[in-house]
Image (tube, rainbow, N blue to C red):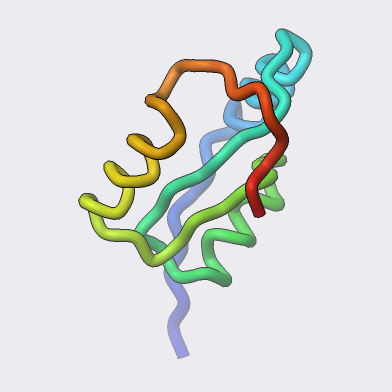
Length: 79
């Protein structure tokens, strides 16, 4: 059996921690990866909400529902 995985950048967890200190209360990862892969990556870096197995149009739809990227959300994680 051969397993392949994307490497998480070393600075990702540090950057997410800095965002939390700056007031970002929740983080969301939108990915086309499988659910187990997405959860594994999220756990490594401290992302608290994961949406996996998404196509590009699915990611756009989530962005539209969430009110756009780069804006602070005033409520807690949906899931």
